Length: 408
Ligand code: PMP
View 1 (cartoon, rainbow, N blue to C red):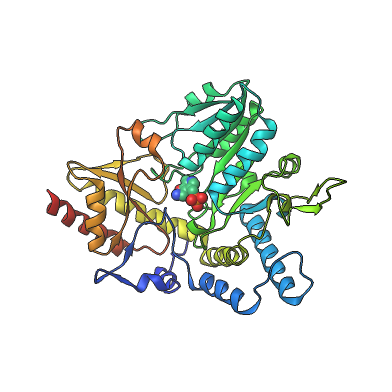
View 2: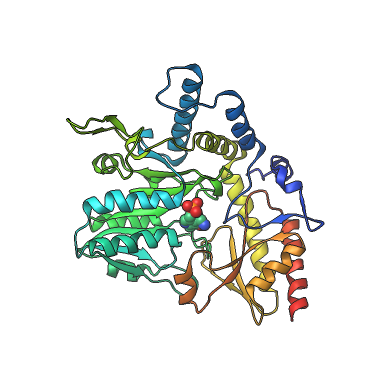
């Protein structure tokens, strides 16, 4: 298999040329947000320069062009995820809004007191809090799928938790705090065997591996544009057509209706528009299409293989750092290296290593429950993307050792 030409990839990202505190930027906070290639930046610019217009209701040329580009991205997303129909693709503000949509629409229409939702312990807060809010409102029970000391979901416990009252299973495809890849295809089969649905948070999976919602057999799948080389402010909810059709709208307003009348009532649009009230993030949706084109042209499989090599190299090097403990040692991982260092605050490492030009994240990564289960409040997290290099990995570990020596 041919190797990724990383020098070429890096030339597509103008931001990678900048310096931080007089040092070349080493950007290792990709799980928080990825950088955007020139093609995405130029797509945003081109939209505002040439065809900025509101979509779907204009009869003029600019509105036609904007609508075609917006709906064009919907079809690119459909193809990218292997969905059957572009009616199954809903644009949201991000993963968070996609999950809130399912909670408020599907949840409120389908859940009864005493029903159960299973949520994995390693979820991002965005796949926990909406379910807690719903549980409180509807008297529904949340049950938590436990995680072992490596950061692997306990599948035996999952099977035991699945029961007659289970309606929905909520799990991430990849954990942003640990890097664990969860076996969602298997989990989907088991959920369906109990007549439960499965919602997968794919925010950390879509940028790092090929995802096919049909092969996975999932009911709902969510991701964010800004974590896969696209702009902020846009995300995607995939939902199975029959489910979405039966779901009530969540937000009301323009764009989501076919007729509004005080006397005769209001008729909603068909999916996907039923779930896209108001003017959406038009420029960002179109630019998300450019991000997908960029990933497709670069080659997701080559990107994944390259990142896998970087992850292996970084893991081996970090294991040699004295007093460092990796948090999340699942056999199947992507992108994320979470760690703590004996006697050193994560925050001190983050601040000092920034002085050396290295951007990592420190804190709870919006995943407090799983960290708490490991007796932790915070970790340092370095996370890789396709534009990172072995030289950057080495420089990062060298900088880390310098920082540790400084504070010890
Ligand atoms: N889930 C996971 C696994 C994430 O990593 C993130 C972002 N850190 C989210 C959900 C939330 O995504 P967003 O803030 O883009 O809605």
